[in-house]
Length: 93
Image (cartoon, helix red, strand yellow):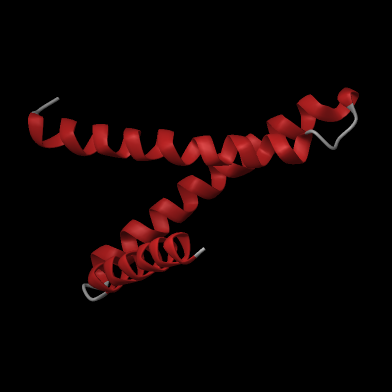
């Protein structure tokens, strides 16, 4: 792989690992309320559904950002706004 491909792949992998930790906690908390005999089925289906959603939403999002040039800056502004709200609420409480 060339350097131009390697850096985006590593950034995507780092982002995915970070987001998957959140998914693992959410799926585990749901599965903890299921009887032990059904827990592996719930965990497996939850992980499969999360992977399908991640792939689908990433594919749709990347196509939209490619076609609608105004969407990328708007998404960036939304992230800055959400981050600002999180910081504001953290220091207010």
